[in-house]
Amino acid sequence: MASKRKRKLEQKASRAINQKMNARRDALNEGLWRYGPPIFVTLILLTAIFFIFIYEPGNPSAEPWNLEEAETNEMYNSEDYYDDGVTLVEFFNSECGHCQAQTEPLKEIYANYSNKIHMFSIGGYKLGNDQDTKSDIANFKFKYTLNWPHLYDNSGDLMREYGFSSYPSMILIKNGEIVYSHSGKLTSEVLSAEIDKYL
Image (tube, rainbow, N blue to C red; front, top):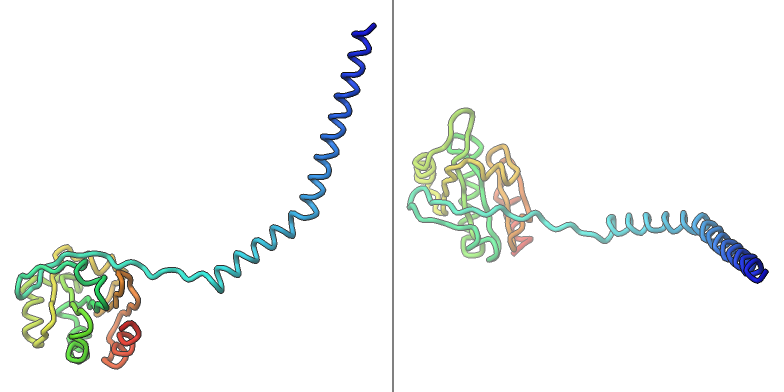
C-alpha cells in the first residue's frame, strides 16, 4: 500500500517537473520569437555601420625581393628600404615606349626627392615574346642617363606578384605597405603630389 502511494507521489512530482519544464520551454520560445528578430536585425545593422563608417582595411603588404643592380652587380634587399621612409618602385621594360617616355618625369622626381625617398626601377619582364636581360636594363639605364638603381628580376615574376600586367607601373611603399599604385605614364607633378602625402 505504501509503495503504491509512493509511486503516485513520484508520478505526481514527475508531472509537476515536466509541466514546469514545458512552461519554461514555452516561455523561452516565446521570448526568442519576441526578442530574437529585433536583436538579430540590430546586430546586422551594427555590423554594417562598423564596416561602412568605422572599419578601415589595412594597405596590402609589399612583396619582398632581393635583386641585383644591372649595371653595378650590387645586391639590394627590399627589407633594407621598405620600413625606412618612403620607397618608389617602377616596373618597366626597356623596349616599352611609355617606359622610355617615363624616364624624364622620373629624372625630375629623383632630382627633387633623392634625399627624401628610396627609388628603384625593376626590369626583367616580357614585352610580347621578348624578355629584358640584365644587359638590356644596364643599357637602358646608360642610354637615358638614369642615376638610381635599376634592378634585374631574373624570374620575371615580381611585377605580377604586385598585381601589375602593363608598363610602366609604379608603387609607393611606406612601413612595408603599398600606399599608392598606378599603371601607365605619370607626370612628375602627379607623382610628386602622391609622394608628398607620405613624407
